[in-house]
Amino acid sequence: MNLAKERFANLPLLATAKNLLDEVCAYPKVKVSKLRPEIQGIEAEISRLMSEKDKAISASDHERAAQISTQIAELQKQLDEALTEHRRRFLEELSKVTPETVQEFARLI
Image 1 (cartoon, rainbow, N blue to C red):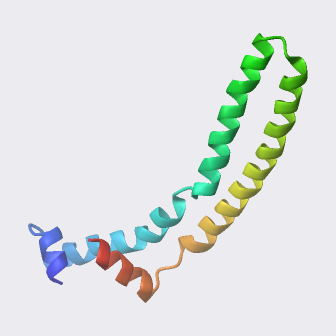
Image 2: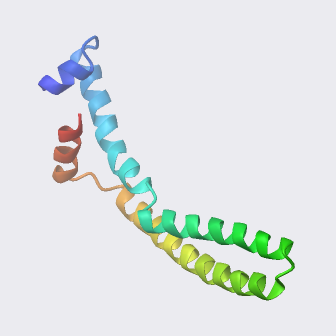
């Protein structure tokens, strides 16, 4: 309750309770919406390879460009699978507000 008074000092108690409840319910969505480092790493590697492929094409190294294209296609497949899993987890976790979620949220504010 002290945290609520600090965070929403100028609001009546009912409005404070509503705002806290809104934030607690939104917390799982925010938590699972962040992309995992694995996904970010794959995206960065694809970007790096695309730049490398452009350089190979500019240098007329078509064999190297083809090899890089194959690598990009493999990484894109991994990325698609990881994003599908991320979306599944997002939808699964979206509606979960547990006592643990509330405690974790309380530690953050």
